Length: 346
Image (cartoon, rainbow, N blue to C red; front, side, top):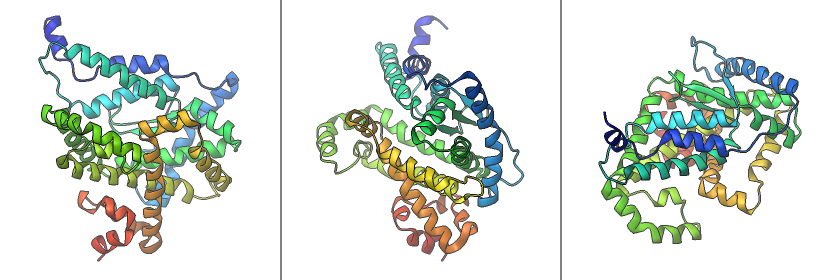
């Protein structure tokens, strides 16, 4: 294949450039003595095994699956891993060749912009389970971010690291114990971004952009929702409901495991919630643009749904959500758990 044809086959985003840009731009982590850093890395890796064992006992998910340690990375390592996972997730949906003479330039620009976003997120993310990274999913823990958050909140180190591991191990179990979830999520994402990549979809988006900006400034709807075409809105709602469920379920589990595992869990939750709300004007603008504020609402709404269902029908009854895509809560049902209970447990 000649160089020109190879360039024409480049996708809409140059993921290699995104990874290198983000890894270069991401801020350095906090200064930690070498011995302390090594001990933190070792403990995080080991705690993922214990954490997942506790999550399995509470949720009933994953019986018989191997208990595997997570991967501990620095900020550039997370950026590169995130770019790899996003490329795998979006590879089937984004067109691989457009034939246009400006395609290499557009891919380069998109790669740089994506790298900038990954650099910002790389200084914030504590951990992540990526079902599309590596050969069969990767559980990542970002050591400098975990250390920075623990120092800022002044909470016990081992307790906080276990608390973070409980959240991420819950995400790993969601995707490894529920056999259909990974493909379902990938298919829905493919439907969403595939429509946005079509020429008609982009033209429609640009035509509605002025009104979109006006409504976003008024705060009537989130920007991500406003840019969806009517055909994509149903897909977007399903993905939002699923994401809210996954995040809220993990938040519920990390607290419900209890003080026997994380003695200072009440203090950690209180200080962590306040930390999520904190930030100056620039930080708040960035959070809004990147959708982080919306994600914070997802934690609360999803945890409230999980708590309400478990309180009424127990964890076994809650686990009906994992039966099939048809038993997942809708966006309306997330806000009204009784509606989900009537539909699934009638």
